[in-house]
Length: 198
Image 1 (tube, rainbow, N blue to C red):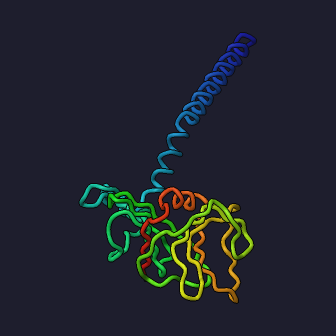
Image 2: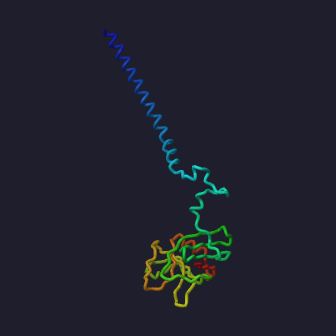
Image 3: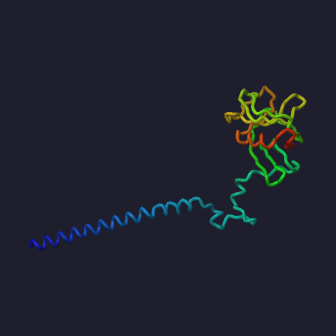
């Protein structure tokens, strides 16, 4: 009877050991497979209905989503060649190089007065100076002074803050983000054409 009991407990221990090894093996498999499953489900979650139907490319072979991120085209009627284009309605600037493909575009925040549509040229520049709202400005690029003495130009706040124009004052500043202000400064020396469109 004792031999039978010992033999039974040996079988029991062997069974427990085998079960433990099976559990460890299963958990190791799950751990190694988990990153792949998360990756697959993340990729599936990011697929849009258009991607599910096909490659998402248009007829020219470009990604279908690229057009969503692309800035609006340079307004028609703004001329050709190197120029700064400002759209009053879109509150957007284009730095259009001599090559039509070399374009940078960004939004600006206007002050209380808008310039009239027309063609101007950069008349003066200052690396820094005070804004009409008391904010310290940098990369100031002016292109027009109207009959009422309102000066129009592009600039960026050193601290990146948006303008807070006083409605009682007639000012023509067009505030840019600092990176856009640097781009304007490098692009538009004195005499550069500035085209204002509606």
